[in-house]
Image (cartoon, rainbow, N blue to C red; front, side, top):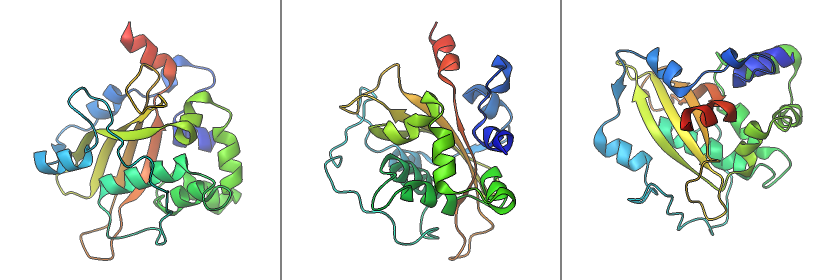
Length: 212
């Protein structure tokens, strides 16, 4: 149902209090540990000293991943890959980006539940996202950077905040969109993959309220 999809994206069509802010999500993540400084720098590479995105590779041709999911990727790399796939959603075929997102969705996610119970298709999910300007940013952003990365003490859960840059030149602006990711992995074996439990877009009305 649409309600389950709305829960996955934390989108409320009626009440202001139904959407989570970054602060509410991270307030519930007490006892989490930050990623090491070196790894966090690696995750946020591309951001210059002014906080803007240095997208020197933007002109490169996008090549969709051949292996989905890929156990060789870190949690941060999964976030980056999925956002890049959604930005190039119809390459090389219609809704391939959404298919990749589906491929990185964990068995605990609402997405997989909808696929199994309602036979949710990539085109149906894309159509749902197209109903909201905030959600459409997944397809129309110019670049993405990871602003925050936390992990659980056992290193089996990852909590990321990504920022979708909307300006044509990839610079920061008030129109940037924040996306919260929760990922999990079953272990540290070579064939264990990081998968997405939840992907939540912060509604623009909350971003505007914070800037006041």
